[in-house]
Length: 302
Image (cartoon, rainbow, N blue to C red):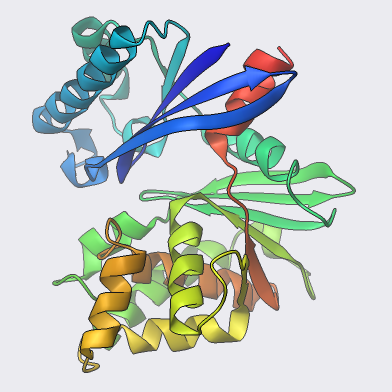
């Protein structure tokens, strides 16, 4: 069976097509548009231009699926629309204009799907799973392969960039402002209380980009999944506006994070502050996330 999943996020709108065979997922095709829907939210309202952009891309996906007679499709949106005051109205308009049934996924559901997908790939059973999105950060504390706590924190890479940065790369002063906001949120989060050390599994685009950037900067194999925590501040500092970038630096950025040039550093700021708070020694990236968790839950096991 072929099954398409469309994910409307704060930074990107993605479609992934899977072959489901013997209760296993095989990704056979994916496509992505970098839209930055979070930037269309003004005064907590999704602007019409953002709704129009979402409809344009979803209709493009629908046309592609129709061409290949792929009828099984699910679509969902996360913080991109969930946090807007007019979320219900925006979703209703998108459904009416595209014919695609679109669901608003709560932060709690998002965290659950992330956990289910990531634990299929993890080789340890206790720690944190983090997914740093454009408008929110999904956080899961787990032990013995069971969820202990799950939270959606209202901090994201695109939101931080939009609020504080005045160019693609933030300055030291702008990073300091980002750190202050991150701490205002994570310092009061109960999930981080009384933790002397925990492992971190990172999923999603920000952690994927950070892994690719680390591997390129430090001459690691492309298959390496681990980012040592003590290297993250070095990476942030290296790509701070004001630090003179060489041609090699620019090539590294364009090669590894072409769609996240403006959000990778704010995203790594969030990752770094969480890693410091829980004394993590590394962040391990796993290429599994909400789309896979959604399919495991509703299609394979449902």
